[in-house]
Amino acid sequence: MAQFGYGHLIPSIPSIATITQAIDVGTAVSAALLDKIGLMFGSITDTILGWKDKVTFRMHYLKLERMLVQERLDPTMQVVVRSEFDDLVRDNADRKVKIDVQDTMLATQTRQLATQTRQLATQTRQLADQKRRIADQRCLIAAQKRLIVAQKRQFTAQKRQIAHQQSQLQTHGQQIEELQRLISTFI
Image (cartoon, rainbow, N blue to C red; front, side, top):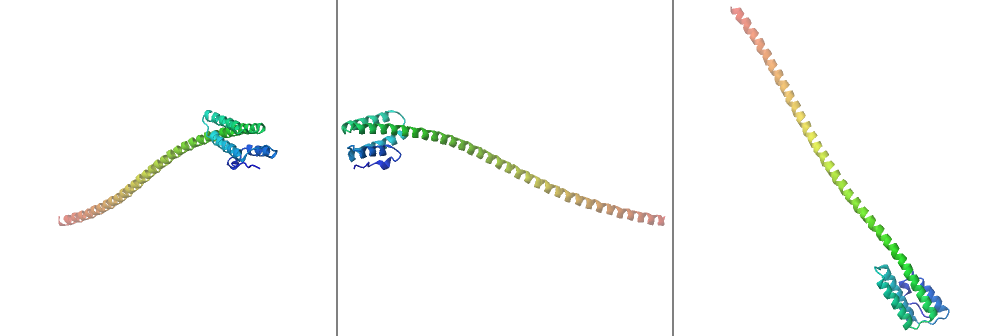
């Protein structure tokens, strides 16, 4: 019994099981032809998933038709292969749409992430600015505190100086009083 030589390349395609069933019921298909069909189906799968226009798809379809004619494949088997080709195209076109949707979602998420990253960068800069302003305010407050302490010391020194001057004035007053008493004594 012939084996589908490239079935492992496209495990998601139902054509493998269908063609194998056709072989089982007695359709004469060579292993080499099955290999050709397997390679073509695998190539079609890769092409459709990277599809941008219909030209490449049309080329694959014509190539398949030429191969069916050249290999003189049994009419029943031709129907099977064409049917599986159609299924393959439809399945992979659906996969392509899903992939495109996922790509669009991913692009949207990427843009959202970029926006969030920019917002985070802005917030980080704003936070850094706030920290610098707070640090500047703390430095200003510390300088004001030092100035107040210095003014307090100066004020205390002035009070001591005034007290000393008052004491000297009192002493001078007492001396003047004593001199006046002495003078009055001599007079």
